[in-house]
Image (tube, rainbow, N blue to C red):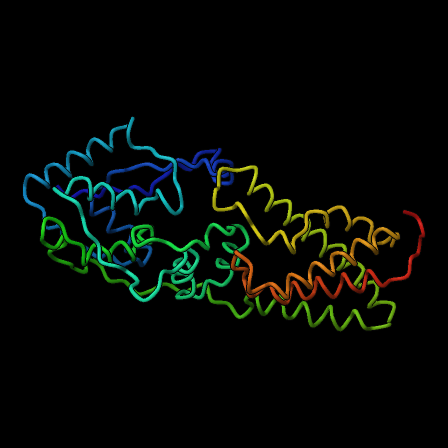
Length: 332
C-alpha cells in the first residue's frame, strides 16, 4: 500500500468564507494514492522529503490501524486551530501515540526561545512576503507574541521535520532514514517593489507635502484624503474588534493595532467637512494618543509591524493639522 494520510483538507462549501472568518472551519483527514499526491506537488512546484520511521512490524500495524480508525467518517473531522491543532500537530501526535513509547525531542532552538510570531516570520521573510506579513500582524494580536515551547514550535512543518530528525524513542532514533522524493525549484516569491513600508512612506511624504501647501486645490485634495483615510482607519478598527469579540479566533484577541485604528474614526470622518468644535478636540486627543503610541511603540506587549510607522506618523500629522483648523461652524 502507498497511501497518503493528509490532515490538512477541508470542504470548499458555500459557507466556507463565513466559517473561515468566524473561526469555525472544520478540517479533516483524507486518504489518497501517493502517485496522485506526488503529481499535485509537482504541478505546484513543491518538494517532498520522506522520513522513514524506525518502527517494528507491531508498531507499524498499530500506527496503520490508528490512521484507518481516524479516517472513518465519524472521526476524520476536527476544529482547526492555527497553532495548537493543525495538520502538522495531528501528524506528530498520532505518531507519538503509536510508536511504542514516549518520544523525546531535542531542543530546536537552544540559544533562544522564539515567539510564535518569530516562527511565522521565518517563513514569510524567507519568501519576502511583506504583504502577507502585514496582514498577519494586523489581525493576530498579542497572544502571537508568547514564546513557544519546544513542542509548540512544531506547528510548522519544517520545525516538525527537524524535530523528528533527532527524536528518540525507546533508546533509539525515531527516524532511521531521510530521502528527497521530489526536488522542485522554488516558485516566484511574493516580493514586490511596492512593499507596505514603501507605500506608506510615499503616502506620508505626499500628503505631508500637501498639508503645508497653501494652494486651494491642495487643500481640497487633503480634505478628500482625510475623509477616506480616517474612514478606512475606523473601518479597520471595527474589523479588529469584530475579529476579537465576534469570532472564535483566539489569536485575534488583545489586538494593540486598535491604538491607531480607532473605531471612532468611522463616525468622525463624516463630520470632517463641518469642522465642529468637538471635532477639533477629538483630533487633538487622537494626536496626543498617537504620539504616546509612537513613544511606547517598542515597549508594547504586541509586536506591531514596523511598516506601519509612516502610517502612524501620518495619523499624528493629519490629526494635529485638523485640530488646529479654524472652526467653520461653532456648533457642538
